[in-house]
Image 1: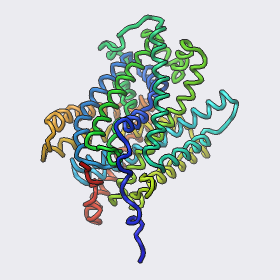
Image 2: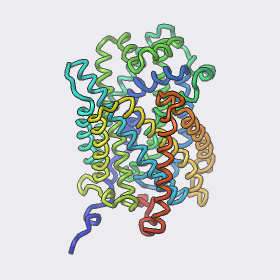
Image 3: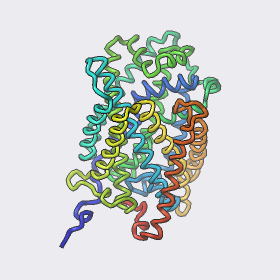
Image 4: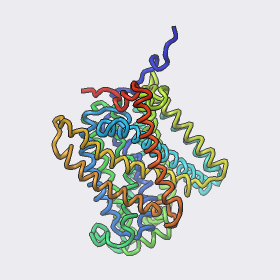
Length: 483
């Protein structure tokens, strides 16, 4: 008698492997402190002309803390590696849940694949500049891809240990940079970047988009709810800690950068040096060794972010395969490692095909692969944040489940309104993220991809309702909550 493969291989992830610190490492690594310090923050200053970037980090941290109230409340009652997909299913229905799943898959895949462009480009440039070794960026990306594939195949706690080491080194380097800039500020210390007037000049809407992009990945804590030791508490605590760390640390770093260059000169300096500004300022205060060390840790920082998003994508594939929305083989977990290995392999194959195509056909790893793909992913995640805020209200409207009105109604509504405003600004100012002219077709074509994918998901969800009632009934159910 033949044995069904899905029955022989467990459809559950490794249990009780990780705790609050581990999830915080995954979340903060996805946002990558050094990448934000070296890339996002100078680009924000340069392209928008807004001095109040440090204040924006605190404002958005407050908005995401509001969002986290409802998000954390749902995590205490729903344990599913699909996170957004599961929450929206339980709050708004199965068809919207499938639509959200499709958006999440495209968004996280786009973020992860786009990071391979930055990872390969940065490493190739470093090898060329320091060792005189010329290696095509896409070859370097494929080497990193193989390492990430191996880690994604193994147990989640191994991934957590790798990320912990990389993130501590990265964070310490950024902190040393911050302190050096504050202690050598050429124009003295000033709180001007935290003043309201600092938000009233420049392209404020675009600046909020750049700042929001720095938080991408903060919501991924719930993706690991099936693998943590105490899902009813771990996810919520990790999410709050991650939002606080990202918001406060990045605001401090943006302020230190402004102090290092001078509040009156930081915008001009950012336009002149771009992503090199951190290394220019660091070398001035700490010597040439900082620049070399900083470039090494920038590579490891992007590697950590890429690994974190790889794990998120693998778990989405797993959740959707397990519940029959996608082919069931994707819902298989490794019998020894407890990892979503089929989802990991699928993501690896997809990323390898895209990187190879860009490499062989001469695609731009930064201007196209990194810029287009990561901004497409960021837009999709913002859309999911809005939908999840609405889903929280819908889920708890039927039964409070012992949660406070603040967690299940007030905070989600306030967060939903604020995030919808960010989403509107994102759609109307998308050219600021892409760096394209206002009349470029890309400004509407890329956002249209997110909308189109969501519509396809809605149609597919409606199709499952009539064509495969058993699969439709499993949508969003995931693993049972472990009390």
